[in-house]
Length: 278
Ligand code: LIP
Image 1: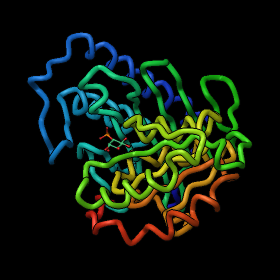
Image 2: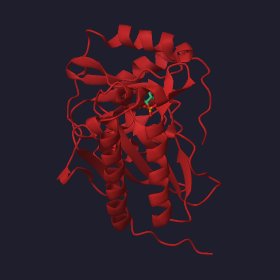
Image 3: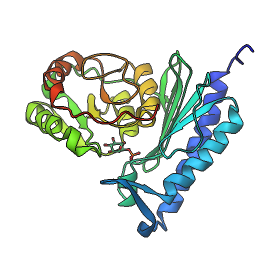
């Protein structure tokens, strides 16, 4: 049966409303958050009842919007069985920040088909910032168009680092990244919410982000928002095929090749990591 043509602009507006609704739920629950109800998925990898409730609500809303789509979500709600369309959802990116009442934390929702990401929405709750973009469109923060910075000199670049839960596989690489860049760039920051941080590059606040061993739900929405804002995302070898999020290097494009030259030389320091659920 011919696949239904999707009105991406109309669908993106509906997804923005879902992200705002879920973000309002996160903010509301934060006021009475019970740290006694936090589970540990793996060492230092936490999930709370709020993550799960947010995901259930988002999946229900998205299913109503596009019943034929599958789901790849951080907490496992819904399923992906090879459908033409697939939602990628992180219901609370920045979980550890949220548990400790720190910023940023956000909702990340993306839709892809078998070829590419079609739309992405990231709602960062603490600053009430809705980042969004759809295929062949511009990137926005709330109603304002956003663009990456034009910083091209490494010593002026602000770089976001992510330290994944898989410390054993990432530690040596992470330490080498700090040795390579600390004192030689504009600044390094560790913020703990990949989806929001990719949008910060799209908005021109940072120039690059480096992390490995995260989930496709962490980066899918930020990927299209960054791309439509003029940015670039590859793995540490320079391949644009990085949506499995095993290696994620994002930038404003101007500093990409110079940083990539250093990442390539350090790549063998990465452990095996484990394949994320596709
Ligand atoms: C987080 C990512 C972050 C990474 C953390 C964690 P979560 O996602 O956004 O970049 O460093 O280890 O994976 O678990 O808060 O959704």
